[in-house]
Image (cartoon, rainbow, N blue to C red; front, side):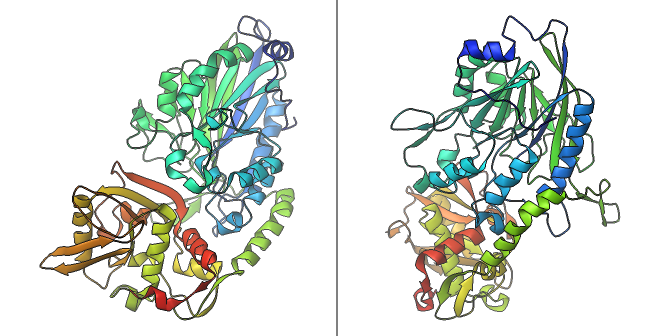
Length: 540
């Protein structure tokens, strides 16, 4: 069975009915039974290569997918392989090559379609257009428009004829993209409500296909409790009738339910998984990074779609035993030779790019543990300023535990930066009132030294006296005194925002945004943009 299917989106409804041999009133054979296997992944984030423990990676995924394809073909079934989006951002070897190895690897895997994720906008639109050219499958989103023309920027859906069974795949992208993506890359781009767009398209899709699948990048929030996030897959299923299956992404979790509206928080690799179901719609999500391939086996007969079985298949994952040792969940999946041949040159090129010079220092930027955890340093100030600049913030803070090395005088490479920031912490920001900001900074300013909690500050000045902060000023977007009724943007990493190192939590604040950019990536861009760094300019 070939992984490629005939596609015919954007043809007339009459032609679609003729090609599919089906319509809302005429099923594909009165008593015909169709078996459809749906495979899915999401939130790939540059993980085309396996990790240091040999987990995941596209080469092992290829072996697993091909095994399933052969099994499905032998049983006379049909198969679709879908992605919930976010191919970009997360691993330097991928980031520096604009995710070309990832998209070309997806071609070899035989993906049929993907939803466009918010991290597809971590680069200018022309980069995304280049990625579309690399891809042999459609990148779908019904709710992304060119603001000036009112026209969609991408195909809203794709239609598949699977041996007479008509399947429509609708793409939807979180409208939070307008809030979390880099504004510099969103000129003339409008993100409309994915729920409204789906509701408008469903009548048409139900006329043109027997099964409607939504490939989404909206997030799964149990019982529709999405908090500060835009509504996700549960809200979509409840508010839009007629979607048979949602293949999701964005929240990066295994959607395995303990019972109605309650996620199984104890799920571990190899466990049974029960997907969510809302308003007759199955909701699927396969965690992240290709750690799992989700497999759903459906039967379609007399207009009814039923789920026979569902599993999240681990891709060479390990699981911690009772004694704390790690062991592989299943028998090791060998890596596909053709995929390795495709990806190895990209991996080697990525390693070479890690050693490419990104800038030059005329002196040392201090990040050694015995300095950065005791006093303000030039590297701490530079890192905080880089994060403030990347988020348009008025000020920034960095926990010193997130700074793991110094940068020596001379050329600087991406690999050097990864020595400073090895954890891949995301960069976030939060909009706070002046009173909230003052209270937060007061807590941090009085944390003791000699721990990872000691704070490095950027774009802010104050005098610490008598348990309080005096003459508090920010110096980011402009220089101004902090007033209790003002609003100020604070940049920080996601670890600190989540309460790491004992910081007050900010990740549930209504003004909190996790950009998804990594601290290392932000620092690289900051140094690259300047080329030559005069360390005298970064005295604390």
